[in-house]
Image 1 (cartoon, helix red, strand yellow):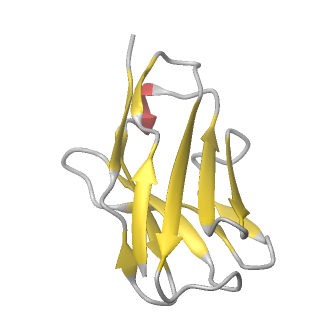
Image 2 (image 1 turned 60 degrees about the horizontal axis):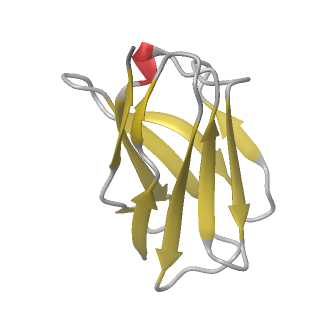
Length: 112
């Protein structure tokens, strides 16, 4: 599975960003997809996950602020990030849990 993430950038605290990840290759609408992030000097951590049926799960640190959703007609998963905080600054990666594939990452920087 090939994964390509888009949408990172620089945003002020309290702002919003939407990340996209387009999946191609051996993937169907039943495959779960996920987002992870890695801040400088820290380990990669789970952010959110969505099943093929649309069931979602979130890290406690983003619950209520981030929303993961998918468009199966486009094999694309999205991460809507609201009320961003400086501690959300990281490289965000999309992931295919069943195949273990990772996208290339997109930088999100939250700073005034």
